Length: 291
Image (cartoon, rainbow, N blue to C red):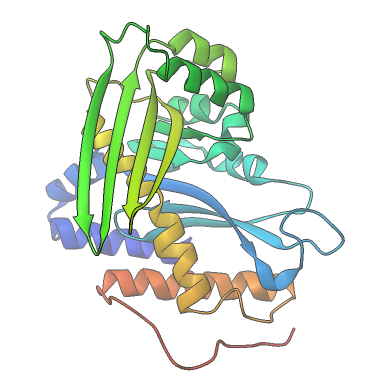
């Protein structure tokens, strides 16, 4: 927490110098993006969830723009991502921020708690809530639906032999249904198809979800940008810890030591982002510690 607070102060000062008035403006800016996601410490066990040798899990609250990890919390054996996150959803964390979370958080009143603390949310709906996902899929694919209130945006990217088309469609018409499905009233639901063509191989992936952001405060283009930004917690934090720093291959099995190593790796990556270091690849083998 102390390191995270220091990184936040350094980032604020770099943007606003040391003028108190400018620091106040920075602190009051809305919708700083926080991505919430869990990660397994693979060296601590053989089973991802449960089993006789379960892997220990940690939960991250990650500032997508700066790469700063504001919270890294061990998930106790008797808890999960939902129960670990819930005590963190205070005004200090949520006010003026936008929290994005995967489907694990769609089971409880995540959105209500964040809104009560002064923040906004985006939740992705996946296969662990099959009925809700089926309802969203049926709604957005209905050819006879009244689309007068819908909004959309399309982005196309080409390069390195790859063509990607990202599209998002939003609708405010499922507000009442969202209250029944996940216990909160959302301003909009969305469907975000991504089409990818690589060497004549075509694939389509559709992400559905809810958001508390209204069309007045967040355009479809901005919403698509934030949804893409959520995956920085996977690509820039978890992937670099696993692949670049060799965390997955590390033989540490004693949970407290593994958790401390995860903290150190997170600090290394935060400092790399702070100093704009593009890569930390090394030919050296990963560090192997004994408990």
